[in-house]
Length: 468
Image 1 (tube, helix red, strand yellow):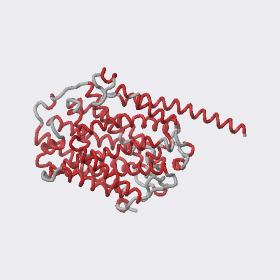
Image 2: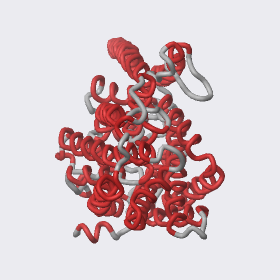
Image 3: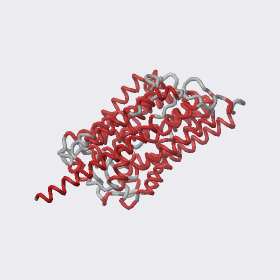
Image 4: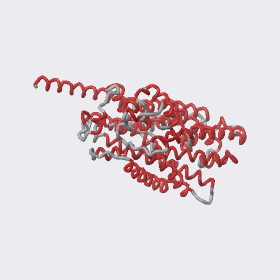
């Protein structure tokens, strides 16, 4: 089957393991899926936070964004390397660490994350379309952007890969042209490099934001690498995903820094349109179409996670295309409602949302990676993931659940948000180091207690065999 034929057929698999004879694609596909889906307006807005919310100068902002993306991308790509080996979505694989029922805690939070990111993309896309047709308003634009993504979410894996391959070229070219237009046609103000200044809280806040942008993709990535042939190998899958996501994020984030410094007040989307002048319609249309790729990814992964949640509760159920289609539409409706209700306070809601993600995703990624790479070395009983009793992983892995809750709680003294600032963060002038602490403490804690639990299980099994 040609690549065009694959892209235009509706995917029949959902959360089931992908058979070896249906594996296809190369590691290059992983580069374009993560490069292409990040070339969008929401990434521009996120990069702009470095100067609008955290008050950094240009070089400080670019350095902080680079550090955050380079570090956070490691964790994202380590998850991507699991897909070709196991052939199942990431949230199904989480049953191997948390147990079948224990994984529902993480899966439920991830579903909320997908809906939140989808709603954020809808708001930004709707705002950009409203700029092209001022009389239309942003509400119809939000609905239009959402509908553009639903088809890709329903068709599934191959169409999304094809979509992002196209957007990698188209959006990449437009972003470069937009940056060139701002620099050479519009012109930068004389004090551009002197605006704002280095400050430690802002530096750490920007690094955290960029790192989270990458870590937030961790629950996604195996969903798009699970079709890769098993002999793709972990290294090619890692590096293709890593550089695709890091480079695809940095390009629009740096553009966001430029726009935020030139026009520090108001919406970055409106400012981008003003700075690119006659070229603005092309920029807004292409980046809005790019948002449709990102929303399709959120819809698709959200549907897989929702089906995983449902199949855990009803183990005999094997969801198919119809179930994925229905769930995709329901998730879109929820995100559309959230976007319409929250669009007037988008920036404050978005900043709070990504900080919340930081606290709940970090301990999960630590547990998953330690279990996969250091305890089981990629060896899992995939069939056991779908057993009603959880197979060898059981219904609840108490060690994983306790370490997960511990990983959230241990971050609290280091949290710095508008709602709550921990004592350590307060003493550091509002610098948020929670994600570093969460990773540094959760990973060794889980390794120690999980290793000890495995040793105890082996002793019990040995004694039982001797008794027999």
